[in-house]
Amino acid sequence: MREVAIIGIGETKFGELWDRSFRDIGIEAGLKAINDAKITSNDINALYIGTMASGSLIKQEHVSPILLDYAGLSSDHIPSIRIEAGEASGALAFHQAYLAVASGYYNIVVVGGAEKLTDVSEDVARDITSSTSDQEWETFFGVTQASQYALIANKHMNTYNTKREAMAEVAVKNHYHGSMNSTAHFQNKITVEAVLKSPPVSTPLGMLDCAPLSDGAATVILAPLDIARKFTDTPIKIQASTISTDTATLFHRRDICTFDSTILASKKAYDLAGIGSSQLDLVELNDNYTISEIIAIEDLNITKKGEAGKELLNGRYRIGDKPSINTSGGLKAHGQPYGAVGIAQIVEIVKQLTGRAEKRTVNGAEIGLTHTIGGIGSVSVINILKRVN
Amino acid sequence: MSVSRYWREAKSRYMLQGSKCGRCNRLFFPKRSVCPSCKSLSINNIDNFNLSGNGVIDAFTYVHEGLTGFEMQIPYVIAMIKLEEGISITAQVVDIDDNTKVYIGMPVRMVFRKIGEDGKSGMIYYGYKFSPDMANFG
Image 1 (cartoon, each protein chain N blue to C red):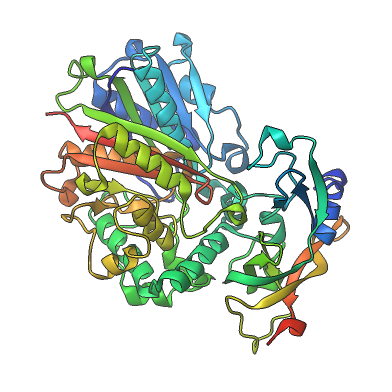
Image 2: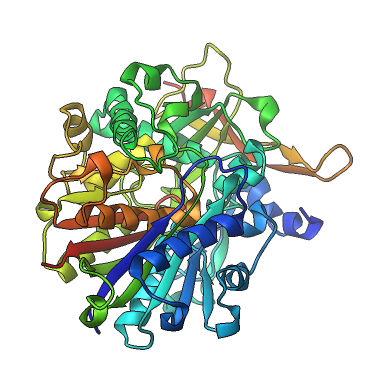
């Protein structure tokens, strides 16, 4: 296996982009990344695209030839590959692209994630959001995605005495980080009181515990590390890229307060990278609901099980702490365009490691981890990225 | 939903019919044809098994933003229920009024109820929900 680096990044603003179509945002992010990597169309061997629900959201399946065509690459007839893994579609596309370059089969690969969530009404979007749960045995009976995370929150509070305010602190921290990110869906700060008073979605979770439904796209360019400096002075090395899968159905798990997929994928990634969680400077992790960040911090072994809430109440994980968690604003504030999420998390780590993270830059950061979830922890994708000195 | 997609799951949804590995006796709901413990050794050695429908609430939530078709029931209770046979299931808990305190450990039993419908003239769906089990309150 060859060593692989990220040589370019691009992303759109995340949010309600009513004047832009799926292909508009996909192409914008792609062209920005191609421009950033200073490559030309002749350099590109393949395109990988992560999108979760284009069929339900814009009634368009097989988006891979459309994005290839509108990127001006159809006459090159290169492979264009769409990957679906729920909310982790972009992260899985990245993993597949990484393997393709590491194996030596392709050299320069473009990996993009895109989702257009505001082309349907909020009710329809909520049904689609719940479609990564088991349709026959969960959703059929009225189980929403928020209700699944609410069950986890209820159990976690009961088992570990996790405080409601600790969950609120996740949203407050991530909105604070988002206030320093010009591409974030939400750039406003919020208070613990506002989170606690927000209208209930599925108790104990309120509206401000939930990440928004966003439009957005993000792209990165991969190349073998040994030629990466031909394109950029600041290649970011992929130290590890791992995946672990679990049941789709939440009630089939041994313990709903833990995502085994996250534990196993991160253990493998730490081993491959030769580091421990204490060496992480930056972490972009899944905070689609506030409780999700709490269990992710624990499952990534950043704290012991049951301790993340206390750490958050002590003001941990803000920009400048080690690790600084969700400096982009996370899914909560930066936004949640499903297929784009995994790539956007990688873009944030690259921005941080190359000094392009605006006012939220974490000085001296060298190692970052991304953690992307599809379904209710049904798949976890972990990437560990490192600055090359 | 097509009639066939609904009809083929009716026994499991009407009477909690799951399955049981003939090799290790592990129970499953819904049914499956390969036991995750015995793997290939369990193939063709799994039979149907009807669950009792008695259990206790292991985690619960009041859903205020429901799925399409559930709007009229808001807020409704969704719970993960530990069945007395040792396996879990997520379902709606009904017969709860404003004075009912839902709690972890609350005994519940399966009841047969209407789940939804395909519009005014379409198919009506039935299946399991759970209700507080007054006989087992202690």
